[in-house]
Image 1 (cartoon, one colour):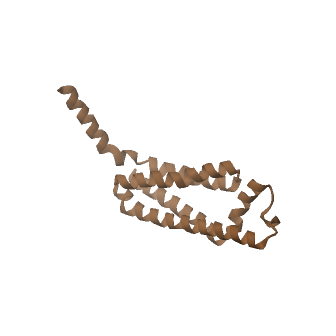
Image 2 (cartoon, helix red, strand yellow):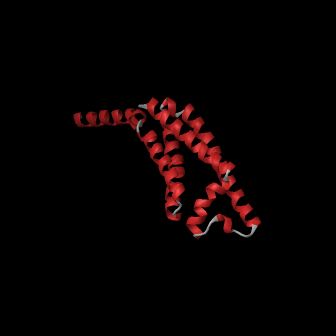
Image 3 (cartoon, helix red, strand yellow):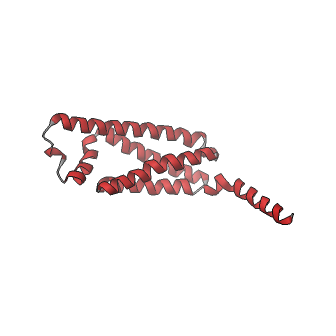
Length: 155
């Protein structure tokens, strides 16, 4: 199960990296859906070029910071998660949960359909990848707890 989960998480991280790169390379494309959902207008209706520049630069920087998180997550995946270390599982649960579930909730609230679909795909794949090997990470704890219970009952 762990090998399958690692492959799934590699795919999730490549997907996330492409999502980030698209935000960096084409920030207007990624901004358009959210802008229309919030304002009801097309991004092209922004008259102030400086205002548009600030919005696209902010979006680009957000994509850059997200890409750094994806790169960090690859290190966690290959140094800890692949070796079934619990800290890596928790790192993915907390970090990935904030990134994927938080992003999905945010875009649902905003009503940005394009991002809802992109986040939902990433969230679903992430959850499969993180939940599939739960027994691998916590089997020792469950076995130890059962043994302690047996010893307590016998005494």
